[in-house]
Image 1 (cartoon, rainbow over the protein chains, first blue to last red):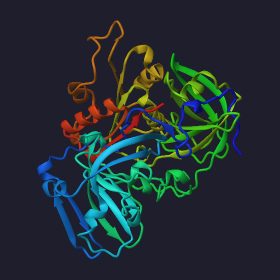
Image 2 (spheres, rainbow over the protein chains, first blue to last red):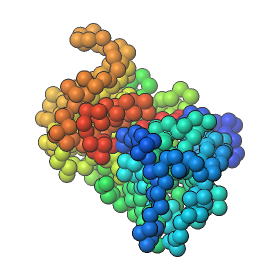
Image 3 (tube, rainbow over the protein chains, first blue to last red):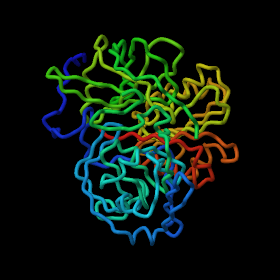
Length: 199
Length: 249
């Protein structure tokens, strides 16, 4: 049972009805990350999937951007409470990457330049639900927002959309990534408000 | 990277505001009595949930300003954002005796433990000083001797949170140095005109990278990006630089 906050009216008339619980609408694009922004030259950029058997699949920037890309317009929800609606991206569907990969593992550890990690079930990355994005709003993705390329999983809290992503490690068992190990939820569904462990 | 597993479920608790004080004309500290507060580390934050009479709710995160001595109240400092939904309520409406819902502590990365021995470099921009103040207070509470340096970038002397306490601790807490950077208006006796934080300032008033300090940078995004880039440019290991940003309403 919530307690009423005396004199609190809120601004709900300005809030659209399609926000997950506890979120508010942001008009800018706040930046969140745990450390300095890494700068990765495109000629040194690689994305690698390592399967549970140790098999490696690697794309360099030229190979990666030659893959079929999609324009994506999605709402994004950050665990720090802001949501941003109708953001537009360009990127490669994860389905496209897995056309070349044989794996029986159910979980993925996404990892990034700079050392960040986050865990995601493989099924949440497939069927057109996740991308590696390299353009935002028609421009190359800025390093602050995860460029050259970041994971984009709009149906989960945005910490799962790893910035500066450089690969996936396939896992049979789910393991916590960086924020998950620091008290955040293993799955992170904003519509079920899975912010922290135990939510 | 450091591990700090938190497996306990975070439940909403009805906190009572037991005191409030203005830190600046637009930033107010709320002293909260939180039943069964599990304790926190310096640098962690908590979530606040407000509920209107018709059931509408709003949540925000605020850094904890106080160290945790084992019991007693928990303090947050809130900067009023003029177009904000929650912060003006916390700065201008809430009064001692009111109750608000709280859960936490949250965050296991941007934290300083009093058992750490490395030198510490704190870079604060504006109200980003709040979690760094908690670290300075936690060091003092533990009687710590870790070499600490704070560089605090803020617009004017009127906008500086905890200015008096920081000056006092800079004199009294052995091994703590405090350096202000005034970006718009400096005190009359300041040796140079106001200016933004620059490489020379971080180089002069920070620690050399060879000391391998743990660096904590907190403030608005532009400040954090700039300051963290400077630390990297000066040769600090990016893995020792922890950042936290303030944004939103």
